Image: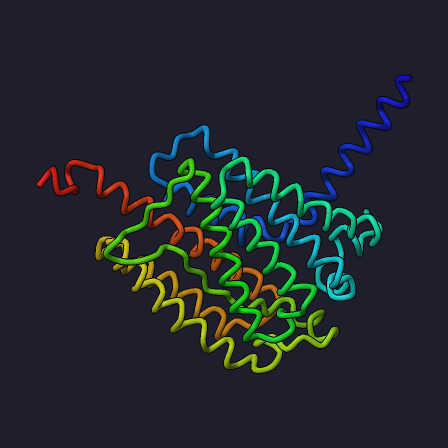
Length: 291
C-alpha cells in the first residue's frame, strides 16, 4: 500500500515536471510579461484576481507549447534537448492527447469568466492552429503577424480576468496591446535543420540591424503613450540601445542568450507602463483632482 502511494506521488511529481518543461522557455517571454500587463492594465484589480490571471495564461501557454513541440521534435532535439519529447519524458501520442485535451479545458475555464474571455480563448486556439499546424511559423512575415495577434489575445483575456470582466484603456491614446518579436538567433541551428525561413536564417544581418531602431522607437513611443517622465524615458531608451548594440556586435550563441534575456527584461518593464500610468491618475499629486 505504501509502495503504491510513493509510486503515485512520484508519477504526479514527474507529470508536473513534464508540464513545467513544456512551458519553461516561455515563462520569461510570455507568462511574466502578460501577467504584469494584465494586472497593470485592469481597472479594479484586487490581489484575489492574480491567481486566475496566471492560471488562465498558463493553461493557454501550455496548450500552445504542446502544439508547437509535437511538431518540432527534431528542432528541439537540436536546440532544447531538455524539453519533454526529445528528453523522452512523454510519448508523441500522449503529448498529442495533452495538446488537444487542453482545448476544451481552456474553453471551460474561460467561459467561467464570461463571453469576452471565451472569445479571447477561441482566438488563441485558432491562432495556435494557424501558427503551428498550418505552419505560419515557417516564414518570418506570417510568424511575426500571427505572434503579435496571439499576444494581443493573451493580453485581452488576461486583462479581462484581472478586471473581473472590465476592459478599460486610455481613450485618447488607443489600445494597450503591443509586442515586438525579437529574433531568437540562438535557435538558428535547429530551425535551419527543419527548413524554417525565419528572419535570422533568411537575412541574419538585417535581423540584427533591425533590433536597435525598432526597440528604440517602441521605447520612445510607449514612454510618451504612458506619460513616463523624461528621466524614465531616457533610461528605457538607453536600455533598449544597449540590447540593440549587443545583438549587433556580440554574435556568439552565449552572447545572444544574454541579449535575449535582457530583451525579456525590457519587455517586462514596458508591460508595467500601464500600471505606472494608472498610478499617475489616482495619485493626488499627479491626477487632475490634485492640481
